Amino acid sequence: MQKQFEDIFEASVDAIGYATPDEAILLVNRAFSELTGFSKEELLRMNARDLIPEQHKEQRDLVVAQVLQTGKPVEYEIDYLRKNGSQVPVSITLFAVKGDDGKPTGLAAIVRNLTERKRADEQFRLVVESSPSGMLMVDKGGIILLVNRQIEQQFGYERAELIGQPVEMLVPQRVRSHHAGDRSEFFAHSELRAMGKGRDLYGMRKDGQEFPLEIGLNPIRTSDGIKVLASVVDISERKRTEQTLQKERDFIDAVLEIAGTLVVVLDREGRILRFNRACEQTTGYSSEEVLGRYIWDLFVPPDEVDEVKTVFKRLRGGEPRNDYENYWKGKDGFLRRISWSNTVLTDSDGRVDYVVAAGLDITDFQHMQEQLRKTERIAELGTLASGMAHEIGTPMNVILGRAEYLLQRTADEGMKKGLATIITQIERITKVMNQLLVFARRKPPDRQAVDLGEIVEDSLEMFQERMTHSRITVEKAIEADTPSIHADRDQLVQVLINLLMNSLHAMPEGGRLRLSLAREGSYVCLGVSDTGHGMPEEIRSKVFEPFFTTKDFGKGTGLGLTVVKGIIEEHGGTIAAESAVDKGTTFWIRLPLDEAQAINGRRET
Image 1 (spheres, helix red, strand yellow):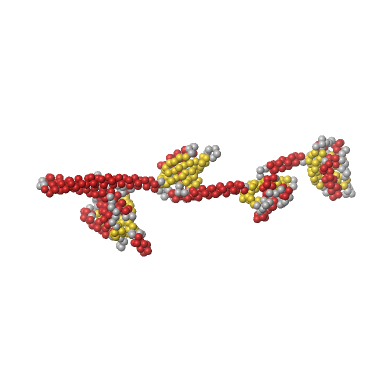
Image 2 (cartoon, helix red, strand yellow):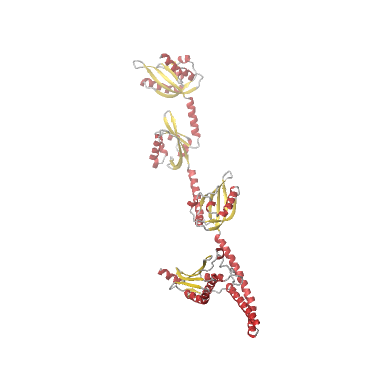
């Protein structure tokens, strides 16, 4: 047993020594010799106080006296003198060896070299001190053990004012109890791990001012148990920057949402990231319905998809911006013409991050341009018609008068037949010229109270014989007590005659003519419907254009429906045509009641 004890004694990595109560060294192991640099023989001739630097001897004497008096071991840290004159930091566990009578017979010491730990502690201190973040260490009870200069600057305290104080002094009063609970919960975990940085936290400076901070917690295992090292970052400036950026984002959002321009933001793959209110109103889709979807899958007509993808590819390939037009298809399937101005946003490497497209709905603008062109064309044709009526009308009247004179005086039947043909054609020319004059110089309506039902009956009576001959039946749905309207009777008769003539021409083999008249709110609605050959869409859309006609050459001027439309619009009304091939055509005319009638009508309903 003695031999085994000696082997363990010598093999210990810690220095072990034994001395008399007055500290004369009696026994040391090899590690003790290596630690101090003295040989065993030299050490056995020394007193333990010879290894203590002068400035630490008083402290050492107090520890020895305490151990001899109480008999309890004491652990403390001190420096040892080495043979070469240097000092080495050590941790000493000193305890008394007692005899059978219970009195101390000597002192035993276990000495551990703290050089590496001290070096690590110093490196740790340097790292903590040089950290750009505030660093502080607390124990399980929340007592501050260590702070760096950044903590001093952040909170306005001197280091000495913080060490040994509860960490709650750095926390606003309103959250101190909650903070202590969070710390207790952190220490309660059996497996402590670093906690990610917490945002939206607040610290309190010495002057009582609160400021936002960001904290990261890391557990540190020490011989005294678990400690927590906290990194603290003052994010006041960041918060101010975030608030400024948020205000800018809110401003941009507000501008985008109230802008009449369509704004779409796409990622580099063509998926929708932003869709403003103007886009929603134009397409009928909400933002929630379109976000994340490819723009060409949703809005672009099939025949334009390849073109749009090509434009997008050019943008993604480095073209900074471009302008082009295309059609956009709404949720209801309606197509609108959009003029786009596209630009790209890139990252620091020049890689395209986003494509921003600003669009202007030019559908109505194009329609207005077309209407303007038509108006200009009509004005030019009106000027031409007036000139033609003047230049042709006078000689035609002369020719007509001479032909009629000769017809009355000749007895030659062949001559009479030829003169009659001349007179018929001159009358036809005169009729065409009169239509041109009506078209070119339409007089303002001479308005008075007009019973539209009476006009319908009178107009039908004009064509009664012809309709009977053509096997055309008439249906009437005239609402009783339909109020009169304020209009030019002669012009409305002209409208009815034109529409009835068109219906008769559309039913050469017979059919059914239906006329309806009813009040619709503040309007009177007149419908003229036939079961004739009807019209395809490409013809129906052009029937009100000047000089457009489907009749054979010489059988129509193409001005009838143009004149009709002009008369209706001058009366503040509207006219629309519905037609389908082989199913017939219906013209719907809506004319406004005068204001007093409209008000009375609303009161009645």
